[in-house]
Amino acid sequence: MKQTPLRDDHSTISVWRLLKRHVLGKRIVLLSLTLLVTSFLTFIRPLIIKGITDEGMLKANMQVIIVCALLLLISAVIDQGISIIQSQQFVKMQNSMMLVLYHSAFDKLLRLKKDYFTKHNNAEIVNRVSTDIQSVGMLADRSILFVVSYTLSFIGGLIGLFVLNPKMSVAVILVIPLKVWTTINMSKRNEEISAERIQCNRTFSSWFGDIINGIKEVKLWNLRENVQEKLSDQQSEILQANRKSVLCSCYNQTWIRILDSMVQSTLYIYGGFLFLQGELSLGGVTAFISYSGYVLSPITSIMSIRYLISSITPSLKRLNEFFQLEENHQAVLPCIQSRQLTVTSFELRQVRFSHTQDPLLQNVNLKAYLGEKIAIIGPNGSGKSTLIDLLLRFERPESGKILINHMDIWDLPEDTYWSLFAVVEQEPYFFQDSIRYNLDPSGCHTDQEILYVLERCGAIELFQERFHGDLNHIIHFDAGDLSGGERKKLAVARAVLKNTPIIIMDEAAADYDTMAEAHLSQMISHNFSDKLILYITHNYSYLDIFDRVYEISNKTVQLLTKEEILQLKNIENIHSL
Image (cartoon, rainbow, N blue to C red; front, side):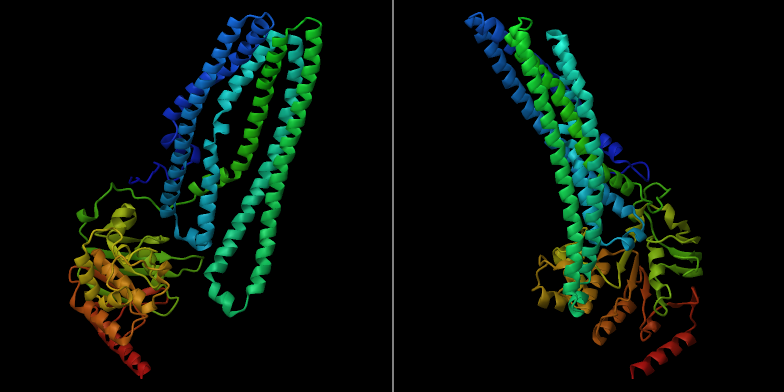
């Protein structure tokens, strides 16, 4: 079933508000009702057993034994039936919770600023988001949501204890503070260990992702032993943190069990004494010990839940911090469909941008119209790619405006704005999916249309030879088995197939051979009269096919004259010799 992105009205959201809105609600009401029923059944069970013992067995009344036994059977069947219902609801709740969190996390990633992805590698991001969502998903664990049941059981147990014997009840109550104190302290320690373990995993994922991305350099520089040594060091830290977590849980459970056994032994001794003195019946002793379990076990369970939550808390905090990261500016205009927005002009007006105090671009003025073909040149590091990021709203100018049809581009909804562009990047990315999906991710075109564009862009031979003419052929990870020129041909075909009013080509012919570059230039020259072409290039040989040529130098953009363009072409021709 197709899932709709789950968006919040605010730029930041909290995990709890997200789950409350999309997951909880009716399920909590239903579960609360089932918990009330099971708590009632749990409360009356010791009383039924007391009846069997005192009124049935000791008084040799078979009828009472049979009736009470049947009541126990009925309560057990009802209890198990309710348990099945609860399991179904818990599974649905946990699945819904995970789905909501993953959808919301992906939607958040789409809104985050570009610098988030430059500071963190892909492996680190995936590990962090997945680990935190999996951990937070444990909030739907049955033990956590049974707090209500444990609380009701605790209250019912106290009532039962005082009804049966107030003196013995005091001994049970005195143990409660000790159990609470023990579990609270262990929970605090567990939370510290969980935070340490998450940080170790986060550091390792970031480091290991970086190593995988640079695997060629590891081979070429013979860094195997060095990397293995660092891997051992980092894994040692993770294993040590895991060991601390396991031992902390073991110590906690061991102490709780010893304490429970001490209380139970004491109650058997004191209960036996009262039975021999005639102050408490045999069934009363059995019921009292059962009710003492209802009091002490919920304390253990509730405190164990706190112990469990302490291991979830670091992930919950980090996930909340993730959802509160600063996003790209959101549109102020209502949603406009791209087909309702006819592009006529595009303008940069006094644009300034910098990553530091020193501006990378300043006083940039550029205006282009639909039907024009604009070339942008400049040396490496001059700001050509930054200019593209500004046009695509991946970066925001410090001052000045970027306008489309005299509207500020930041006032337009993201989906509307991005649908106006097709982009051939310097390093085009390809999904590990079919040729068809990579050329037409939206699935809007027929096979015939795809093949026509491949032929038009000079990529039909590549398609037939490398992919055997099969649009369902699966591309390897990021098309790693293709050459740079082959990747660029597919990227150009993808941009043309998208059929948008604005096409941006960033070094589209950088890896082309001479014939392929000539074909691309001819295609640009004789087509796209209904589009705006922005072409970033270092090659000056074909500048005469463009309506205007801008050069980025001295941190600004300058329009070149025909004489300057001719001079650049002559220099290019000399260098080619």
